[in-house]
Structures are given as structure tokens and as C-alpha cells.
Image (cartoon, rainbow, N blue to C red; front, side, top):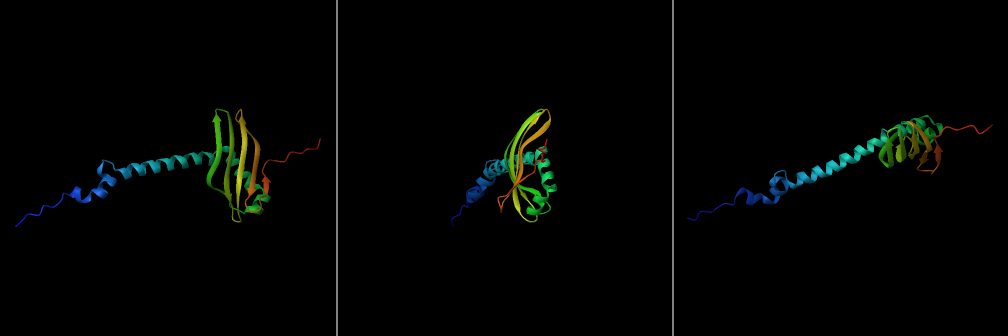
Length: 147
């Protein structure tokens, strides 16, 4: 009788063993680490915008504004990923950010542009752009123009 020599485990399973873990940590492990690392960094940077003082201020102003509440509804929250940039250097900085805002009635875009001088933010633009109507609602305090 002839002895049938069976292939080794690695020869039978190399097609899945190499990508999963054949080279120490595995090629798939390296790919997943890269993808999740990039994702974590991306959403970490996005949180910098959401928690910045100007964006918090703009969201507070939006929640207090009767026109915004009428157009978008209650429970206004920021959603999605911020688009723009923020630059901080000690007591100075700049912000130019837009982010989706959603309420119980609709969706809009929160736009914040400003500069920080000696620790105080001065806003150039602070408004909500309503998606359905393309109406722009100013969130900056109105200054009396009468002298």
C-alpha cells in the first residue's frame, strides 16, 4: 500500500493564513490599524471644531434666535463633519468654519468666521443658511445705527 502524504497545515491554508496573520501581525491587521487610525484622527480633529468657543457661541445664538427656531425647530444640534479651518496662537486666532445643523423641522448650515485678538473673539460672519429656502439668518447682535 502506498502512503498518502498529507499536505502541511500551512500549505492547505496559506490563502487565508497569510493575510490574516501569517506575517506576525498580519496584513489585514496593518490595514485595519491604518484605516482606524486615520478615522480616529479625522474625527478627533472634527471635535476640535465642535468644541471650540466660537462654534459653541454660534450654536447658543442659534438656539435663542426665534427666526432659526421657526425655520429649523427645536433641539438644534451640530451634525456631520466641520468644513473649514481654525488657527489658535496663544491669545490670538482665526476661525472660518461651516457645519451642518439640524433641528426638528429642518436642516441648515452654521457659518462662523472671525478673529481672536488678545483673547476676545470678534465675529465677521455668524449666520445660519436654511437648506430648503436658502434664507440666511444673521446671528450677530444688531447694533443701533441711530446717533
